[in-house]
Length: 158
Image (tube, rainbow, N blue to C red):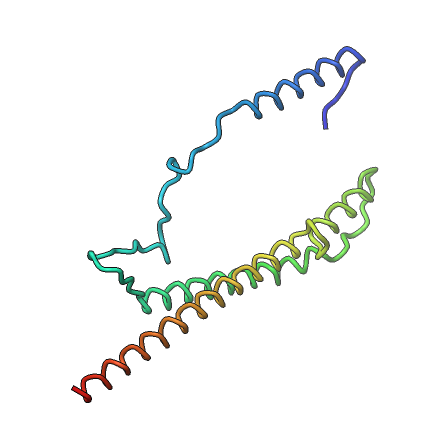
């Protein structure tokens, strides 16, 4: 919140704000080619050896799921701590105590924009990502097993 001294000051601040907005619109945006490759867990490069086959590393998927589980536990701990923020603050004596209590209650609470709501959203996203990894791994594993079984059956017929 800005402090305004008089009408001329308000106009000056308004012009400065409009100029900032104009400059932000005129700034060049990043191109996709400038974005770096992902690094870290689950970002292994796909390597093709001249064939049309992609090989899935199940150990790396399990490691990624374990890392997601660790993040889930960490965020769950933060959520448990954040539940303490949702409790009302003790009454203060100052002129802003009511507004402080209200502000902290909203930001620490489970309402939209609160810490608890954000953490619950993150936990939901982690659970969705873990489920997607599990689904992909299960589908590929069953395809691999079916292909291996059909190859074994073909060897017996030969």
